[in-house]
Image (cartoon, rainbow, N blue to C red; front, side):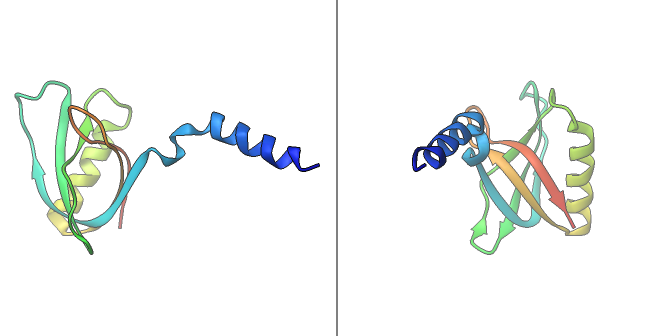
Length: 102
């Protein structure tokens, strides 16, 4: 019987490796950056969090929901709203994978 929980945990780790791959930041969008010389990269932002400034995080222009996410970030920046972003730390930039703003 003890092998069943171990097997279930092993399957979960194999099927959901991305569950722990994202850094999560919550704060107000304080800086927004656009750069035409960065092909494929959309807007980049910084948040002011309780721990200080977040690292740069950017949208990937080829991802689904890019336009909707950009509109949310732009509104959050203009209205000083608080957002939570899920970021995959990667090269050449940290990519925003999900976000919510209030």
